[in-house]
Image (cartoon, rainbow, N blue to C red; front, side, top):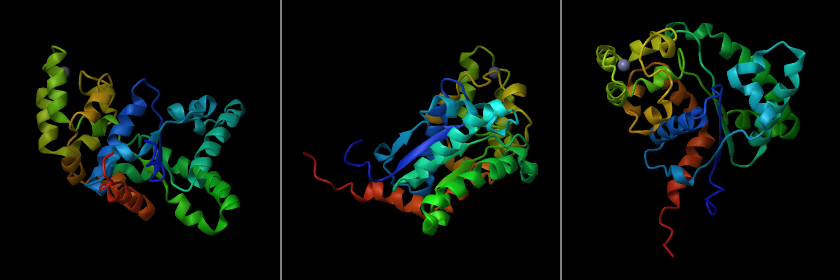
Length: 255
Ligand SMILES: [Zn+2]
């Protein structure tokens, strides 16, 4: 990694607290970056999780929404961690929260609305206090990744791998459902609580679904929440430029 750390650093945050949650979202982010800049060298990107344990507590299960005064300290630590990243010369923050609604009702997502008021606003104030002239561009480096209904709406799009995993589980009953989704990918974004109500896999294989040939192009072409997230990344010109820099130095002679 050293030698390329000036390219970009991406802190990947997720509301999910499971053991593979960070790896899952990081793998999806890599797929998104490849859609933005097909030649990107993702191994030159300094991906990192949120280190601060107290801040992580506010992130998990969106506890930053809590009105309990005992949770307030952790929410402030989470906000502080994000501000610190955005103030770095090459720092970006990609933050996954679930929409908790079907995609057709995405504009009524309470999670998104609450994030804008309870997280984004204080983050913006913190960035403004340090870099008033750059607040607009720096805030664009904070991108929300919002799957509708939840992250499984994206992961189950890897229908071939899910088909295989269902077979390995000795189930086989999910194959018809997977075939239907493959024919109409946007329909998966309309399922309420896909993890709880559809496949036998639940969230047991999420990291594998995200990192074993995820069909990002087809999912993007479904024009649902994954498309919305990728298009959201495009709003940050600095991100695209930084991703392009990862391959611009690809002709460095080998030692
Ligand atoms: Zn199954």
